Length: 308
Image (tube, rainbow, N blue to C red):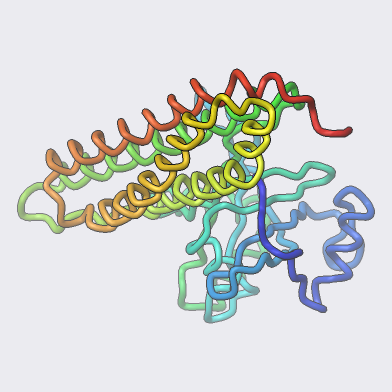
């Protein structure tokens, strides 16, 4: 997952740990020695600048039939402080994060768990790392448990066309997450009955929607700055198609804003009207991805690989 911000800021307190972690493939001494430690890089909610913090983590027990690569859990405990840590507030605003574990470095979607899922996950965390129970006892706030969802394992570079397919596969998966989470929300609301208050829309809907929208914006920015100029230099006859893509980028940017607004209003929405509007938006977004693949993959496959 590309970050396009200035180099990540590391606090003076965390700097020695971060430097030792990176110098020793994730192994550190001191208070963290022998524990499971990762580095989490978030984008500042107010500053827009990357920030890296070391965090303990627990591996989540895989769900039945779940083929995904490792899912990690982190707890926004701040040692039991009364306020959520900055990194948690950052990922609520920008759910796309970078994770370093050992020598592995990958992008993930940060999704706080809620309700029964949060309770099960926290019990699992406390079983593996009992100190978090002390942190919870020290504060009145419920400590957020965040799942770091790694959608896919980056494959070796085999060509720019394949890289575009990989990005589009990830984007389509996020759209499916949004659809599935809204269906689960409406199902829970309908089970509650007319007399019951509606279920609160889940953070999962919001986080996957933001992840899709932020990633699509980054994807288009990289295309505008790199892929499209390179294609025009190598294949000037594709100028009309590239201009259409650039026009579509502007349309899709407006569609992204409408998608966020639609999901922000899910609690007051009529389910059938909401489903119809979400389906229409999804068709428009997927049609754009289809056209990008039709136009861009053939010339991208002809571009030479980057050095190294």
